[in-house]
Length: 124
Image (tube, rainbow, N blue to C red; front, side, top):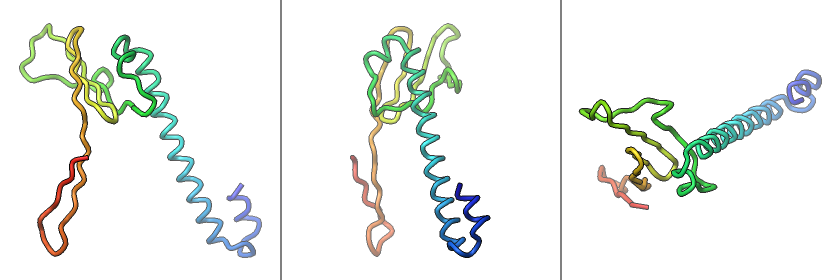
């Protein structure tokens, strides 16, 4: 619709403003599309993760990557050992057999101190 307004109105409506609106609209669309895909992938993950999903499912937690889709292995692990790694937005999970270990992901905020090359680290 914005494309057709730009073509039909030319300079009458301010092409620059319409082009800016189009760019912003496309950015919003792309971001929403990305979030929708993340939500769908996370839903599919929870549906197929068995008991792990039952205990860790959270509406704000999103799947980032898991080792079944993106293979990851432990150096020097046995041939018959089974490891599954799951990276979610706030935790990292290592599943071995029927047990799992949860590693919380902490957020760090790093700021450069004024007039210095030193940094201040805040643990959130």
